[in-house]
Length: 290
Ligand code: NDP
Image (cartoon, rainbow, N blue to C red; front, side):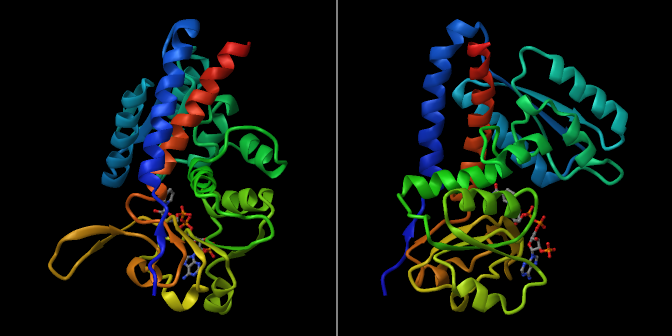
């Protein structure tokens, strides 16, 4: 058997970041300031802290000024709302994101609704989700946009193909479904109530796993030659007590049957960050035209 080709999200993300860096260098003299991204983080969820740090590092690499706003878990909904309103009005801020999940007692959806849709770097505001439903331009949610970019980079044909998305979250499953549909794939969404998930997944030419269950997609669920996209990021502890990251796909075994596969880490994770930067620069660029 031949092993699947790796869809190298890490390499593509690097390329995208260097393109963004150049774009910023060209735009900055005209706009008179660098692009700005505000990252709101509440409490001290260790995974969130890592994500926020990675986003801030990526910003500084490409020349985006990141404004970290770190709040204690005791912050109120009203204080966060007021902060978002201030950032909406701040001319140096092009993108705003709220790192999820928020501690219990805070309403993340209500906060998302407060973000100016033109500064919605995560593309999760209902206005931007609505644009996606209508296939209009707008800020696209980062993880699904990253999946589409990676598929495009490897010239993977989608039109007329059968795609199966496992997971129906508003963060990943639903928007990726709409993007695949926009690319003329025939899309099925599977979820926790789906009957005979194996048979459903086996139909897929393109299989996207966005579940959050370590290595649940096994080779018997994959049609030989399918393209497998693993969105999952799960921390597991091995028998020797060491912890490591795995996806939703049993990588080694599935790589024996798939034609293309994304690794975890190094697949969709870095693409997500690249799309966040890209959205921020998109909002920044708009400043040129108004
Ligand atoms: P959610 O928990 O919001 O959604 C999980 C989805 O999987 C739900 O729709 C759920 O179905 C479905 N599901 C759960 N168990 C099963 C099962 N046994 N069989 C079939 N479907 C099932 O997760 P997210 O969408 O937010 O994230 C999914 C994964 O992607 C996580 O591992 C997360 O860490 C990762 N992620 C990675 C990102 C990246 O940058 N690479 C960004 C965002 C997320 P139901 O609706 O019926 O409950």
